[in-house]
Image (cartoon, rainbow, N blue to C red; front, side, top):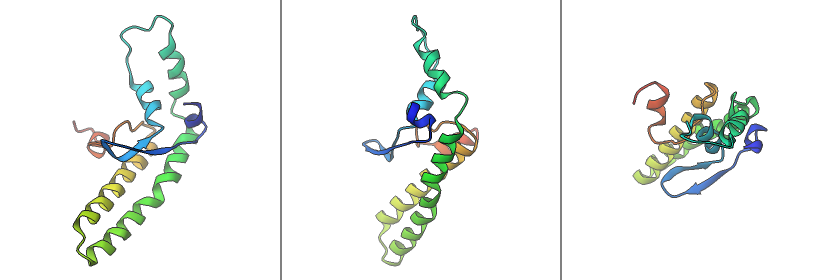
Length: 125
C-alpha cells in the first residue's frame, strides 16, 4: 500500500481477472471495507494510507493505462483485417478495462474489480 501511495503499481496475471490484478486493488479493498470487528484498529490505520486518494497513485494509473487504450484499438483493427474475432474481442476488452482504470483514477475512486466497472462508475448497479 505504501508503494501504491507513492505511485508505484504492479499489474499481474490473475485467473478470473482478464484485465489482470493491479496492486492498487488492495488500496480500494481497504478504503471501501467496513470492518465488523477490529479491536486493534488495524483497518483504520490502513485506511489512513488509502484515504484520501493519493495523487501519485492517480498519476501512475493514468500514465500506466492511457497509452494502452489506443494500442489495443489499433491491434483490434489489425486483427479485424484478418478476421481474427477472438483477438479483436481481447483487444477491445483490454482497451475498455484500461478506460475504466483511467475513469476511476480521474474520479479518485478505487477500481477493485474490472467486471462491470464502467457501469459502476456511471452509478448503475
